[in-house]
Image (cartoon, rainbow, N blue to C red):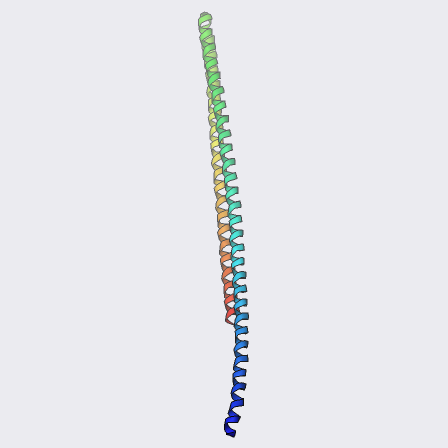
Length: 186
């Protein structure tokens, strides 16, 4: 009987220790679970911030591209209007010269040689003006093409910069993920 008595007090003590260990393990598991949830929440917030930053940058780039496209279109329209005005002025001047020549022919037949010289002179001037206007139109077209090329070069540079920054953010996210996994593993 004394053996029975000795074994009975040790059983409640063992149960008590197991119960204490069990509670301690449950608290540890709860603390670890809370820490894991906190880390996951921080990771999610960091990813959302990175996505929001990239979204803002992309929106800014799109707005810049749209503004540049609008400006280029306005400049193209302005240059077309200038060319049209110059051509209309040349056409009006040519019409006026023809009318003058016709009036001179009708009223000054006896001065035919002078009239022919005047017409030739006016035509030469008109041709010079037409050549000048054509040259101006070519120069404007060349300038528009240069500005367009510069615009596309800037746009490509912005795109390359954006892609580089995205790659850097991906690298940073990968490093942070590895750190987080290392911390979770430890």
